[in-house]
Length: 232
Image (cartoon, rainbow, N blue to C red; front, side, top):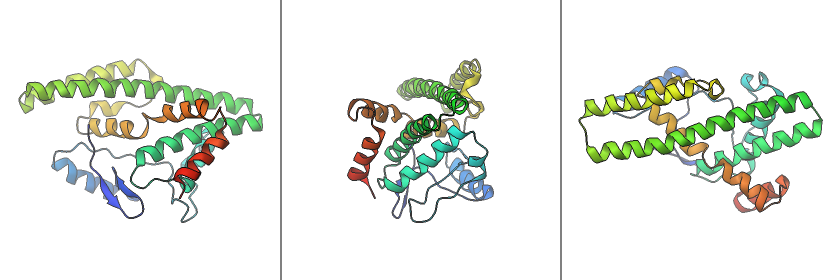
């Protein structure tokens, strides 16, 4: 499970391309699929200009419940202050961590018990999905290592891959809280989705542990440390 990367000035090397028009994204995706790569097209609910321009507030953001809206806002604000060129795994995992922790604290500050409960339910679902995805990525790496060791025929390989991900789709179907997992049924997209998780979600717990152990649950102190160490 390895991704392709493209180099951008200031941003460094990233494992994705961004488009404002779906037709352009589909055209680019087809080019890489024809070359044999797994490709996924995913909409984004927000994006950061790293402080060079005012960040947009999208329609998606305004449609969310308070907790999710605050998380997105704090997530994008984090990018304005801390960004390591070419290390999008670090950038996204840190921003996700800060977004969630800051949103929880802000809701507590507001005393909005209904919003707090709704946001905690959202986080519980996110955590369940991350545990499931992490376990699936780990097992899939072992499965691919087995396939490469046996070097089966391409047709046989595709049949085995289909059965493998059919199995995981059946497992996911037992947990509606995981959300839409239909991509597990689309062979040309599966690897791309797994790589996205592997890159952007699997290290978020490391920042939570750092907050608790190193910074004694002081989020302000932790953020200041990252700004001073990696700030733009």
